[in-house]
Image 1 (cartoon, one colour):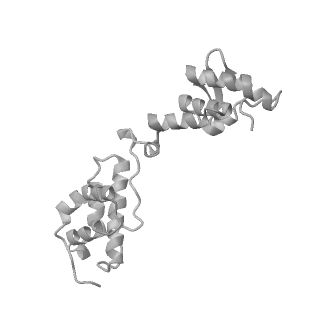
Image 2: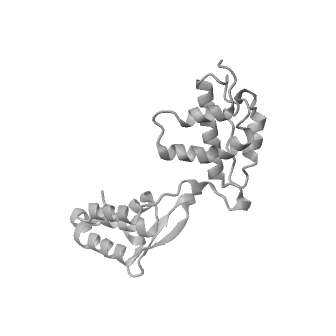
Image 3: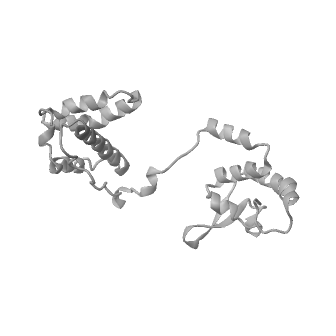
Length: 209
């Protein structure tokens, strides 16, 4: 074991590790700032699990996803301290993350939201423009938000061309209508007219393999 050092000293070493991206270092600095205000002068050897759990519990004003980030960065800092020999073990190793709170409008899916920028969409549309099937699929996925599995399982009888909508069977065997835009309607019509029936006739699925 190395001689006792403060949490602030260990954090400085943690942030100055070679290979750490500047953006990551900045995020870590901002996230660990409050922790250092409270306990930066403490010897890292005397910072207990109880102290750290109380600190995390006091971050209840944060979104649960942000709270998870704070906990993960704190875990990384303490793992680094173990690797460097400043402490024997990580005091919050295995600590469960805070669950989303319904009364705050939190739910687990808000951590997985992803979207493409307009420039990325333009690149995607350009890449598939010469393939009528892929172009129709991409337009419908983008415009309706349906799942790829739902779209590929789509039955031709479930499509209402006139009203620009189709019915899918989603999770829990629940049926729902997906409405699509004019540009998606154009691409779907082109695919159905010029490509689909050239591949195979008298089949039930819209998007043939």
